[in-house]
Amino acid sequence: MPWDADKRRGSYIDLNGVRIFGVQYLGASLPKFFATITDQVADSESAGIDHTIFLLHAGLEGEVPGAVDTLTHNQIAPLRGSVDYLALGHVHKNYEHDGWIYNPGALEACGIEEGPWKRGFYHVQIDTMHNPKHQAHLIENTRRPFYRLAFGVDSTTCPHDLYDRLPPYLAEQAPAQNNSKKPVVELRLHGVLPFDHADLDLEHVRTLVEQAYQPLHVRIKNDTRATEFAVQVTQDVSHEELERNVLRDLIERDTRYRPEAEHWATLMMQVKELALAHSTPEQIVEVLCSLQS
Image (tube, rainbow, N blue to C red; front, side):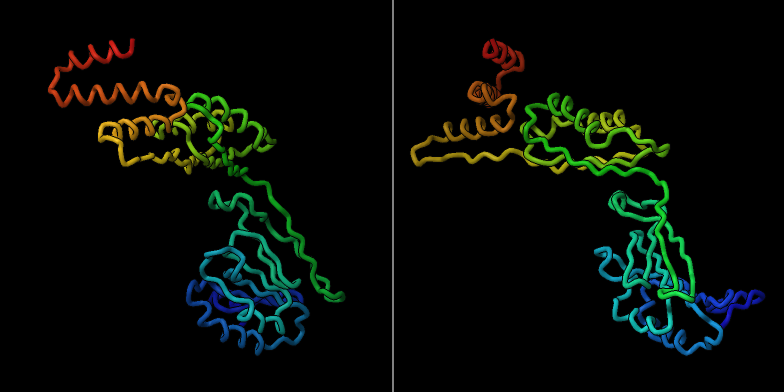
């Protein structure tokens, strides 16, 4: 049915020999009705129409893993006989297929994972005297920078070493750009952390990123792992020896304390014995001071 401006109803409009169909957003119900829509497009009277454009709020299956409200290539294929230009939307990533399916993508990223995607809008020129009848050129608009960075912690030795190495890395990965829009930054820390997780100040890491980029938003992802050590147990080891070995191995996970792991294990065993003997806090402090000296 042609568009009726007074009633604001209709499925297409004709403009100088170009017919433009449009389908409202149908969400998950689109596949159920799409075959009927395709038949109606094919059966519509097309006298005097040289070029047909179909506007469809839907994505194409397989372009973005996990995307919903998409159609398969087989579902779209029947339109090819009656539509010259299929203009898709919904999916925020740019893609094209077979010279007649075009999806420009969103003008701006709606999530950090969309940052690297190409997108913009199409400038389409139609000349029905040529084959193909249209030429579509994607024009990428200026948009906000998105940085997705990954910093390995394996070679750091302590929190301050990590904090010292991070700013040069940030400067190298995303140098200053001529863009008036503040960036969105995701920093993923990965690898084996050679010190206790509790000593990693993620808020300080966030501050370093903010100082480097003055971003609109920062996301810090901590995917680091703790150092793993196997405790060697023999049949002749005593309970006290086993306990000391476990403590020493736990201390050795932190590179800052590894050289003096035996000393710290002894200290911890001494404090435990004092606590079990109901020693006063003053007595425990006195022993700690003597061991430290």
